[in-house]
Length: 491
Ligand code: GLN
Picture 1: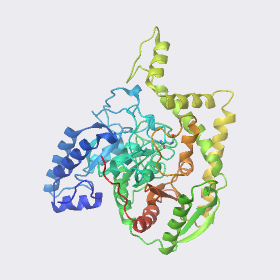
Picture 2: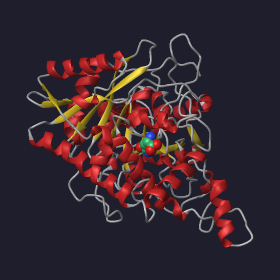
Picture 3: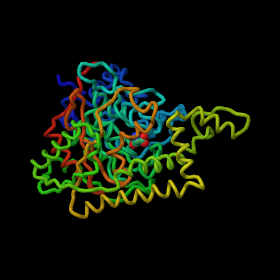
Picture 4: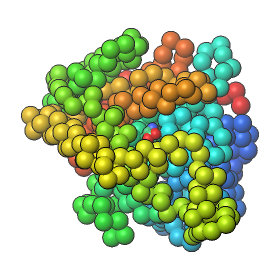
């Protein structure tokens, strides 16, 4: 009997249609796997009752030949997506036991297409972090371990639960959000595929806001094809989000396997960092060779403002966060800590409800937006952002179809190993990914090999606005060459 928890989404979809097994059987297999994998702490809430009901409904539709594109596919949902009647916390104490009376547009579209919800996945508090260690529910453990070591590693962040769950076979696919790298970095750390689509491709409605001009939803999956299938269901115009873009959603899956012959792939020279591990450099070179062998042409390009991306991001993102998080005041929802008057109640609730990293961001954000500093910090960061965007536009205008870069500056690191004394050490994880959010472009992370300790490493492809299709075509070339990576089961 095939292990139902190791199938690709495409295979599971086709097998369900052939009636090789039922949606209920597929769901039960995942619920059992989740129970055995609680040590990973990937789920902050398991929803077996909802899952069984949804799977039964899917079986009925499959029986009638009325299957939607994701009929019967069990998914995990990052706890940043509001799910109607199901606790949604953004992994923050301040949301307490908040149960939304509404469903996010992205998840509503997944259910519309027949998917089954297994539960809510762990993430960094309000998606602020690169290791899932800021979650109020504690860290997620990466299913990957260094060869010969039992040390617990982070799965990356902020969508750490999503990455770990998909890699460990605790769901067929998962949702994530990416503000500065939160889909691509954890995907790379877990040896799976993750794509942040173009800003505006997915509706942000019903997703807990971090930095609204940067936040985008996207899928995690075990293959490039699976990511393409999921993204199609997640995408599309939504009148409830004015930044969602009204343009047709392509059949992304059709781009998987499409020839990349003649495509011009930019290799940005500024991404060759001083002190970059030789393994990452080698991986990057090998990825380029694979694309060349498939008929693409490599060209060196320059993105001169790259070095300002991280500092500018860490002004823009906290600024927007400080404004978005102002709503958590102990009045409307979540935690309330009483005080002698309303101001003290606000202060007590926010001091008690927010974790240290979130408090840091709120303070930085409030500072850079304050009267005397607005021009020096926020306005200047916005100008830098325009320059970063222009760097990419100039390359694309010269005929570059996509860029190839490393996804992360290292493989997964140990829990508790980074950022304790200096938060910037953690922020540096986003060095290759934040530029893409600042420019609003699509970026995909694809597993491309392992480091000397047996940990997965990923490459990133960055595309033109709304050209996710090219990323799927190129990503599949890398996937074919590198092969699928699966962690050895120890849990
Ligand atoms: N690691 C980045 C941060 O902490 C990005 C997080 C994200 O993309 N949500 O801000």
